[in-house]
Length: 472
Image 1 (tube, rainbow, N blue to C red):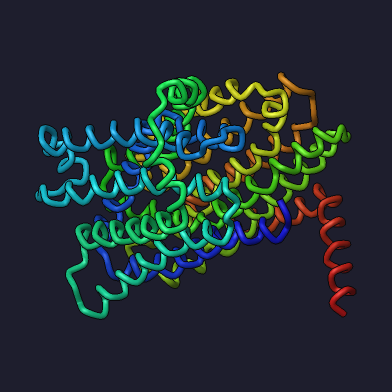
Image 2 (image 1 turned 180 degrees about the vertical axis):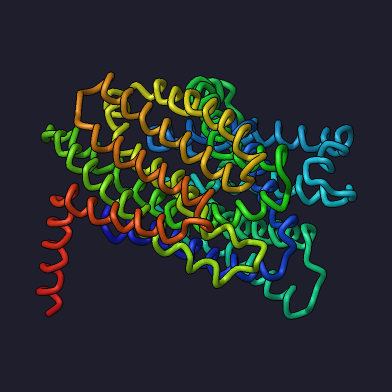
């Protein structure tokens, strides 16, 4: 993959993140906080429906894409079973289980459940078509399909503000439907050849069985990871309130900077390390990558801890706590990204089945911490429980990699990340009472970090100076 194509692929996440940042402050002033919480629960449901109904066939489709001659037949065998299952479940839910759909969103209206079902089905189609587009190497088209729905959502919100429409969950749900539909139209256009091919191809039960054999075991790991990363919002709706879900979802949205880095890093890192392995290069270079990635994660925690107060100037009063919980919210994407560097041994040894252990072992701690912390601290408790669970996730992934591959230094990694999680957790619960003391602690950590990771700082300084002299 050329640097130009990597950059083009990155345009999608970058553009989508920018539009989300533009949308978020507007949304908090325009929509009641409880309805923001309901919108967050909709995202939880959309994600869960795809994880369960896809049967892991989406991952099998990606795995077999380059090795299968008839991509239309492959797509049909991967897409049709899960879509049929989801369609049937949606129909049954609308007929027999309407009361559960209503209670899930704490609504008194049944009519919105039809739009929820439409979102689930459209998202399923979009996910498969997006995989096909990405695997086909259409970087610009792929990026456009990420940017357009965010732009559509923002456009609908602005239209609602200017026309003074009644803002609520129904309005947000309508905006979400239009956003997904806009992406679907674009995806259908860019993959029309594949769709025509798939429509004209027969459904091969043999291909389906082969895909299912690869993909279905991965479902359990996907569900475990979904539960690990989404349980915080579910727990808040159980043990707190939808208002706290709304506040927490805004904190998570600001943490999208870390998710953006996670997405770009995942695209770039895997091809690099696999290329090193195939070329027979010294893989001890991975140790240096882990060192630099740890330095980046610690630096990110420090900067967020010091400057998160700026967020308070852009949000309404009911979101006051967001400025204190952003650091803990960042634990999920930052620690996951760091774990991608340490878990590389599992992938190199093709022992991916062991990777399922990380979310399975981290999930109980998330549930236990959420049970005790959320009733007391609300959104801050959810942020802390997820951040601590992601630290356990990082440790398990790292130790599994060491067990299957080779030993590499990790004491420094564990100490610094645990310190960051602990201080960001303290800030989440006590940031308003001890603002200056915690700020001083972040400054002290930043100074120690510059000394502890001086090799990373030196390399960054040398690179910056070389770029300066080149421009000059």
